[in-house]
Image 1 (cartoon, rainbow, N blue to C red):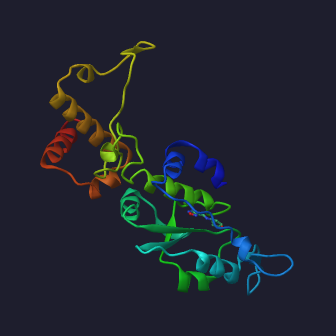
Image 2 (image 1 turned 90 degrees about the vertical axis):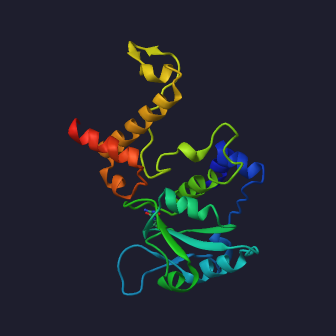
Length: 232
Ligand code: 4FV
């Protein structure tokens, strides 16, 4: 599942350029017995299987902890919901060990003794933690200096200051009869900055009002929002 992802795009290039180093550890390589099983039936009965502690523990022990700060993170629906702020936080780590579960989950003793954090990419159930791991890898890697090509900084990202991004336009100025807002063609950078901020505030108010409560709003933003309340 990872090889395809790591050959493509920005993160693939970052892995090729060594800005981000990715090591894939197969838990089954640490399974014992003729069947090298990594799962077993749940104590107390019930459907589904549980990931055995042994192979996962030995796989974790095999990861050479580099000198800096390394975090062992388990991807599961029971984790704190992953967001941009967490991505920034993790981008300051030297090493992140992403544990991808399968089956119904992992033996609780792994959680108790060998995990630092638990992250969820959303309130739904996947067949494995791999997609969650790729989401975290992608969101964190693009915040590592040098990963996003020179022209692109993550300064204008959605959630950068907790707001949704403003609408974006590119050529042609008229497409299928639909025009690009004139202000964006005006060359008046202050007018463009304000237009983008107002659109960002409107979009956040309309689509994610919850974000307005946590966003870093300037006094200018408060004035804009007050104005929008008066004439929506
Ligand atoms: C998940 C999530 C997720 C739970 C059982 C894998 C599955 C299966 N991971 N965010 N939502 N994991 O659904 O990260 O083992």
